[in-house]
Length: 335
Image (cartoon, rainbow, N blue to C red; front, side, top):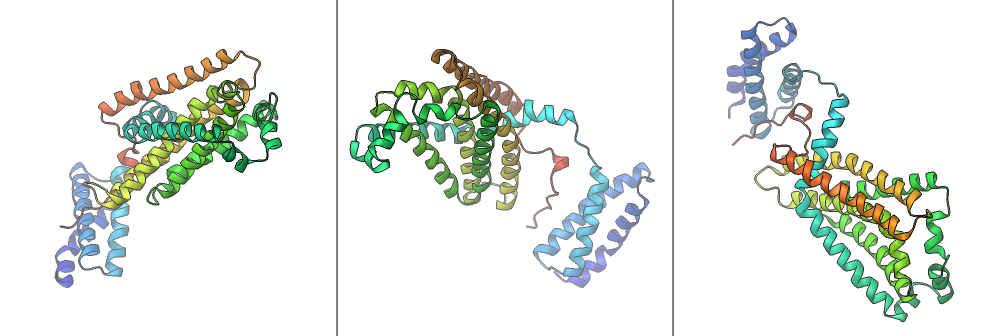
């Protein structure tokens, strides 16, 4: 492409767009339509220049022009409480629903591995001995031991806040680090599975697996589900880097990344609920069956929320991505 000829051909269009932008809101209907048309043309010109004949000065000028035009065309949008309601009733459940093919297999495989490793630890005394000294293991697993007092060793409110913060950080790390080809997510997931397996193995070897499950299930069902959703979403994000599908790698990663950031906000709410259960229900004096029932009700409520509201939103076309007006402009690709 001859850059001089290209500039000579289109300079009048760019100048006309600049003049329309300077007039601001004082445009007629025809002029507003012309502005939109010139904005689209200039965005295409910028894409061509960037891919075929980049010129720093001209590219900077057109980039600023396109940005100003886009701000004028799309306008300024303010967030409101309706956005929060829409996010919680449509965007978040839709994102979780759409990623179910990633987090459900992640959950099934993780629980299976935790059970297998837990069985291996519980049936092999030499493995238990490699974890801690016998007296330390007895201190962990005996009635009134560290596994039980852990949930009541701090005031409920501060313990719930600490648990929520730690779990939210783990979920956020899964979501953010997924872009690094899935490896960090797999490691975080394995550490969580291993910790669960150690508890299963040690308490089962002491004949107190029922006690352990009575302590873990009330909050653990919802908590682990949130972690599995975060891990599955992180793995999906990492796979997008490897296989972006029909989109460009940049566009596909941006789309999945925006959905993942929204997912982090939604999962923070879910983990807040599980933290409240862990801080107030798990160490309470309620019967074991009642505490476990509360955990199952919370888990069932979350799954119904995802499959009913999320499924409905997805069928209506919601993807979990931010609305078009809140995204950065994606320039047309030059073929």
